[in-house]
Image (cartoon, rainbow, N blue to C red):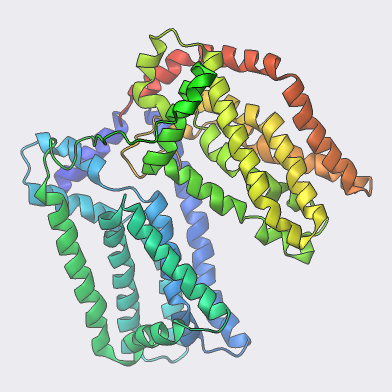
Length: 487
């Protein structure tokens, strides 16, 4: 039966209407995977000798911070890991036992990127431990225990997917633990370190994560098997409308109607809300560059400011009109002006960028010059990048399934040369303009040039929108064909 499943997977791949794009995307992702696998492998080897060089016991130190490593893994999975419901649906019409379908679907998640990359860190690290005289049986039980915990998180993520409140509670608790450790109030790693260290010192403790893995697999298996029918758990969920109708937007006419629909989408759908969460993380991205002396008066400050102020703009804008892909064909039959439609998206991105600029005011703590850089690049994002991401969206043609945890952030249809060039331009142009100021030995010149680009974009908004509208009209039928592709 496994052979039969693999045959179906292969046929699905080679018979797809976008086979060439799929193949190019697979090759690209394979190269990207090899890169990260190599980095993880070097990290696994370097972690041992690096920790030993600074006088720390490698295994104990890794075990001490393992709890935070696993939390980061869980967070990344929650936002980006694909849940297997969509792969189950096509199999339900075939004469295959439900148990077999669920086992195969869950088994596929074990081999995903989030699990295999960990192996490239922990296998080299474990081998180095063995070569340096650590107890062989202890290393093996430790490695098996960590592997079991990672797979436990894999299945836990499937169970808690779409449960934002529960995930929010976990995030709040972990942030509280990090803060309490930083201010030396309470150190959770003292207790978690002994648990992970026990996997090496007390061989029998490996049974605990293995038992936990078996239990959660049992619950996950039954979770999917229970309502494994097209008219039960796997159907498209319809939520009752809430009272927040945003009727005050009606005064803006068609623009208000589109804005209201997009705001409701961002508030109610997990797939769309991911863009808001990512915007928050991008807001903190500047801490990497603005707090390091090595990046002071460097073009990397402009690079960071693009993401600090443009997190929402980039994540949301480059997938216009993909957010409406499920009913895009219907929209094209209505008397809807592309200009009105795109204008509503543009205003939403402008509002999101303006809010990011305001929230980024805490960077004043690191100096007014840094915040002025953020404001200048924010103006650039509003007046220039906002149009550039709409150009990108015209060629992305990624059908986003709002019921899936995965979509535009890794879809093969989003991979093409045009979108790549547009995406690179969003970052390279402000870096080059900032570099002009550095060459003139006056960064204020660079900041002025960046802001002027944004202001010029706003002055020529009507002309730019005319060009964008023409491109969207030209690509309309290509987009419709792409959105029909379910596989």
